Each structure stands twice: as C-alpha cells, then as structure tokens.
Image (cartoon, rainbow, N blue to C red; front, side, top):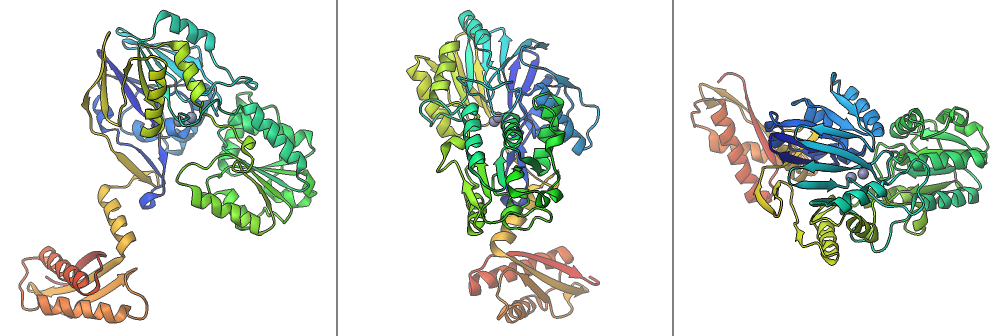
Length: 525
Ligand SMILES: [Zn+2]
Ligand SMILES: [Zn+2]
C-alpha cells in the first residue's frame, strides 16, 4: 500500500496511493490511513501515480472520496483507475494521462516521467526538480537485457540526469535479497512456449493478469500452436480489454471462446488463461482446482502452469490448489521446480546497483519491500560509495536540504481495513477478533422497575460443544440471576454492564474462556 508525500514550499504531492490485500478480520483489503495527507488539502496539488499495480493505485477511490485533487497517471494505469472509480461511482475526478517522457509543473515541483521495465505496461519512475536538487523516485523497476515489444527503459535520459547531479534517489528494494539479475520477460515467454508445446491436452496458464506482456505471450503461443483461448475471471478479461485498447495486444477476437464452449473442442486445442494465482477462494482457478466451476472442467492429463510466484502469506492456499489439481491427475508446473516459467517484475541486486551507478546520487533512501529488503538495499548503496543514506519507516518525515538528509519527525499513520468497499470501524475489528478467537455469549435480561424480572436467557456461539452447550448456558444464566437479583438498576445500560461482568468472571473462573459477551435488556425498565 505505497503512498508517499513530497512537500516543497507551498506544494505537496502524493506519489502513489495503493492498497494491500488481506483476509485479516474478514477484510478484503487494507489501505493507509490518509488522515495526515487529507489534512494537507490546502497544499496538496496532485497525486502522481507511477504505474497501475494495485499496491500503487488501489487506494485512490478511498482517498478521493474525502479530498479531490488531480491525479496524473500513465495510460495503462489511467484505464484501470477509470474502471475502479466507476466501480465506486466516483465521478468528475480530474484524471490526467501522463506517459513516460511527460513533464508537469505541479506547484513548485517539476515532475518528469521516465520509462522503466516492470511487470505491467507503462511503468514509470519520476524525476522531481526541486530547489534543493533533483530527486529521483524509481517506482517499481527492473532492467531487462533484451526487452520485449512495448517495454522501455529510458537509460539515456537517466544517464543525462545522473551527469547533471542527483541529490536523492528513492529506489525500489523488493529484489534486494536476490543476487545477480532478474529473469527477463522473454525467457518466461520461451519457457511458456516450451511447456505448452509439451502438453498433450488442455493447458491452463495461471498468471498475474496485470502483466499484459505475459498475456500477449500466452495468446501468441496459443495462436501458433492451434489452441483457442478461454479467458477465465474478471481481471484477466479486464486487463486483456485494456491491453487491446492500448494496442499492446493484437486483435484476438477470433482466438477467444467462452467457458461454455471449451468442452466441445478437442483437448489439445484449448488454452485457459486464468488469474487467481494466490489461492484466492473465489477465483476461477481455485474453482477449477475444486472442480466447482459451473462451465469449465479439467480432466486427468490436462496441465496447469503457474507462471507466477507465491506472494508471501499465501503459501497454504496456493499449495492447497496445487494438491487438488495433482490429486485429480492434472499436471502442475510451478516456479519451484521450473523457475524459468516466471519472471519477476522487480530487479535483483545487480539491477539495483546499475540504477545507483547510472544516477550516482548524493543521498539514497530505499523504498518498497520490507524493512529487511530496504536494509539489504542500503548495504548495496554503501558498497557503491553513497555516504548519505537513511532507512525510513511508515510515517517517517525525512528532511532533505542541499547538504543534509535526516529524519526530523514522524506523522501518524495506520491501516484502514475495507470490507464491502467501506472501512471497517476499529470497534468492529475488535469485535471480530474477540468473536473469532473466543466465540460469542449473549445474555438477555428483562427488567421491571429497575429489577431483574425473569430468568435471564443465555445463548452462545462458538464457545461450547453441542454436548454441554445447553447446560453451560443454563449455568451462566443461573449465576447471572443469583448475582443480580435484588439489585436495583438505574437503567438498562447499568444492568447490561453488570451482567456482562458477572458472565465474564464466571466464564474465566469456571471454564478459562474469554468470549465476546454481549447483553441486552428487553421489556419495560
Ligand atoms: Zn508494481
Ligand atoms: Zn509495487
């Protein structure tokens, strides 16, 4: 969930506005708490988007619901942002197309874009011209030795900027643990071609749908090997449509078949292009693995190629999907055994080193990736002789002057969990955690003239097994009755509070359990 602010005189610009994916506490996604940035609305002139990945654009609807500012983004990202804003029914956003090479004067900062190689089309980095010198933000990048069509890296421009002097470089740290260079996109394409050619029956290529280069490769290979293509899932359809509209993918209409027509074709003439490589429960790929898809079925002897990596945290889900395929006799090809089937979008150490060598910055701050990645990246900068370096945390305020770089403050930051396109309030998260870990007990009371009227009713979920649930519920109710009878309550809230406390002590003392306890008074008080 990348989001950074650059403040210079009377101008603030935000760089990227991303989300993270999570299933914590029943959330679908998480975005940064934008409160601080929203409070800068007077000076905030624009949000500048480096590229269209969700961890860079996904937070825009949530940000723009509160504060409207112009958004500058490269063409591929613009198409995705438009779609996302429409989904949230947000209209009238000042969304400006800003391709690599464009230069915009935003308040007191001049912003120039340069093209970088990455696993999405139109990825860019930023050259910020400020009164204290040039600041370069790489965005997410890799440097390919043999780029495929449509991939561009503006090395000459960066060399020029480097020779004129760079005050500060902010560089993508994601690949800092990987020695050498990253695998190039072309090699992943060659590997896909080989594995598809070797597959006698249906082939599923599962990949990140935002990588139009990979989609284009799979489509070309299918055409050349006489296979029709079924696009499985909303995101693959969306990205194919955007890539088609921007001319990244040649016409493919004659190649495509809907899921319902797959079974009518000989198995050797089918390629299914699917997203959902992370074991997501609702994805088309997971449903294929569970054989729960309404119109598509795989059989023993078919092949599934994971042209992807497992994002840390998703291992169990992905392994489950793989096991389900394999149990049914479906061959699975993954990066674990065949590393050549996927190419990362992030450069490894030698590419990170090249970026530093091209720009020769006076100061260096690693960004993107975890603290550990950033630390490794910092070592690399030190090896390259950069003396002013700084590690930052979320919320760090970094001051850059003509000769110094230091952390001067921190601003509050946090995480906002989203469920059903709305933030989940903190109290709901707390309740979900309590319910999820301990179950729920409810105590229903009725009062008359402030006194307990009837025998309390206790219901529980997720606390006791069926064999003793009724008995324990009855015990809790008796205990609440015994402790509260005779007491006079000023109002329902006081009675609820007292009964919760009594039930809580009872459960801790007798059962060592700490469920979420709720009480409700009904009837006349
Ligand atoms: Zn990215
Ligand atoms: Zn990213």
